[in-house]
Image 1 (cartoon, helix red, strand yellow):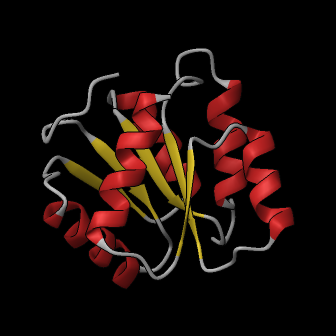
Image 2: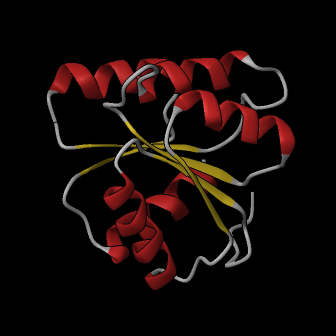
Length: 127
């Protein structure tokens, strides 16, 4: 997959402030085509309505965790190859391993910068 500033990105986080921060960091990293939702269920609906180039999701969310969302995406024939970056405040080896086992494209530990985000996006889309 080629990366471009117009690539549609879906961000998922149940904290509105974090959605704003991620959107701002994406803008700083050169990405403008961003949709944001506050739950895994909303993300799945959006992913079935529109084609995205990437999902960036928080791990810890109410109702559906980022890991559950990732597993749902990997189980869907149409979405299974979609690059998926997991964001979390935890770098516990067990969590990182669980995300890798579920097929995460990349993993970011909070806090992070626009440069880190851009690097991880490039890495995730190159895989």
